[in-house]
Image (cartoon, rainbow, N blue to C red):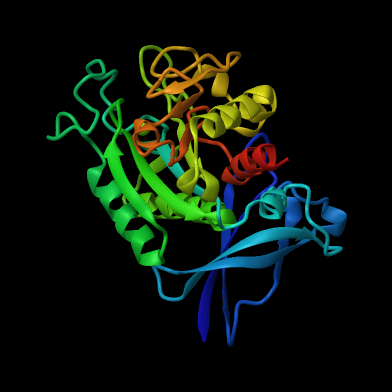
Length: 322
Ligand code: MG
């Protein structure tokens, strides 16, 4: 018998949350169903929604497989909550995405780890910090890294972030699988944290005041950007994205206005700018790209930590290919 852990996104607003359940069966992972009236995806009178497997991973925390799914209605149509469909329609594998997922570990009451006794010392020592007075949660971050690598998800690094209890990992993928991988990496983060009795908070500003928020800087490239780029190409892409800045912000996570203030290495949410090496810009042109004769990638610094990667992919690729 095979054990399949089905994973999907529910219908919660403004951001979906992850759901899962386990199926034991012979053979391949089949289409399955669930009670959509319990996930804000259907009315009780006709509650069945369908789970269609779209990506499979080795299960690093249990035997069997993780099965990422998209949701269809009981009538076999794309469910309104299914943001994956629009991204899949535009994102071919020539598009590469590197998501820098920032988040906080918290206790079960929502306090960031290390904040149980009150507000810690001001920021300064924590970023890439070493020593138990400077860093908390490393064992969980390390376990999550191993779990993702075992599952076949390409994490390219992790680091302790600027606030105490705040962490980041970087997740690289191609085409629509980049979105699937990021969602499954979040799923594994929650599950690994469960084993340590802690929670994960991906809100973009869990602590107001002089504390960094959490973002999800999105690095991206296509074939032309990587191998036959030019200054004109990169500038024109930034201009195109700038022309639809408002739509971008609408696709880049909720409560992002609390984070994009113009402070803490961000541009204001109502302004758009781009520049070489500029961490105060909406889009940074990395020095790597300039030094490689304008072959490389761009970093969109606007997405919030709670953004749906499917919406990010749909916005960036949709804008740059239309
Ligand atoms: Mg960071």
